Amino acid sequence: MILDWQIKHYSDLNINEFHDLIALRLEAFVVEQNCAYLDLDGKDKKSYHLICRNGKGDIVATARILPPGIAYKDAAIGRVVIKDEIRGHGIGHDLMERCIKFASTEFGNSPILISAQKHLEKYYEKHGFLSTGKEYLEDGIPHVEMILESK
Image (tube, rainbow, N blue to C red; front, side, top):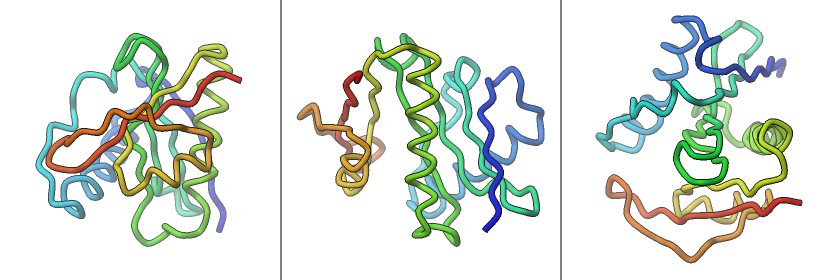
């Protein structure tokens, strides 16, 4: 599968890119998970966005990389999503590695936080994230706060 990866700040996204990444997030988080929540929380405008396109140019994966001070005092990764039909091919691991590398380069060796859905805790552990012990319901879905300490 041919994939094209980019990371852009919100201010560098064109209107079609932003539309398509929001559409993918809504498809996964609102429709698939049957969860009504406010996706447009104002943090996108201050963040970087990883975009993965397939060979046809369609956005098939995305994540939001938040600078320190936006969601937490440290950098954060969120809104991680992969199009349903291409899950299970390792793309999520590549996506996380790219996000972690970018955040480390862009923001220095500070910790990176995520608010992970509880059922994905082992997935994020494979990338070095550890639970802070803080578990909570977010939009009716069990979550756990996780941290990747600087290396």
